[in-house]
Amino acid sequence: MMLVLLGPPGAGKGTHADAIRAGLGVPHVSTGAMLRMAIEAGSPAGQKAKTLVESGDLVPDDLMAEMVRDRLDQEDARGGFILDGYPRNVGQARDLDGILAKRTSRLDRVLSLVVDDDEIVRRLSGRRTCEECGALYHVVSAPPKSEGRCDRCGGALTHRADDRPDVIAHRLSVYRAQTEPLVAFYRGRGLLAEVDAAGTLDAVRQRVVGALR
Image (cartoon, rainbow, N blue to C red; front, side, top):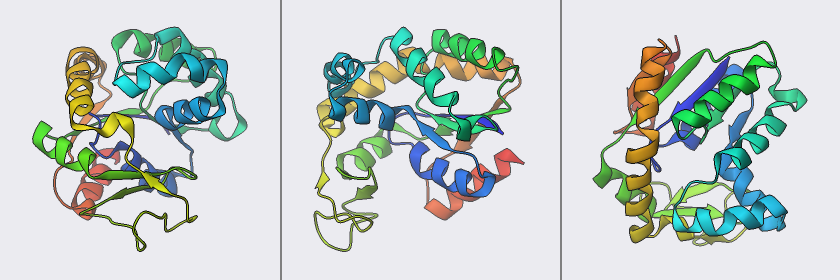
């Protein structure tokens, strides 16, 4: 299956992508994780993206298309993928069409996770990320066993710069303006399924699984 996950920051795309990955046996391709790795490595692409990511702005379409194309060309993604964080606007959606057309393939489904802004602010302001492996925690709903340390690898947990309340508000504004039009774009192509992403993890997961059937 070739699947795209849409939704505002904090909707749970990464969390649910991991669950879908386990069921489908295809890789979870997170463009956010790809960018953070490039930034940490100090690569040319990472240096270009660093200021944009930390301020909540979108990375230029040509840079994102290059990174996504290279990732989807890797062997583990040739039979399918779960794409999280891309596309983020209609131009990028058309770029993705072109990338897949060269592989004589196309998307099977687009899931849009729907959450209101107040819940997003609550989720992101309490989110903590492992510096080493990228695992996600929440100070209220999913705290680590040892404060400030990752359960998986023992790495330090940090509050990302783009999860500050002022940056969250800007990220949501960018999402509403540039990414929400994708909902209409993919609905018009008959690929879209919208999922209520509020509630317990198990309840949302059941809705996600139902939308993929």
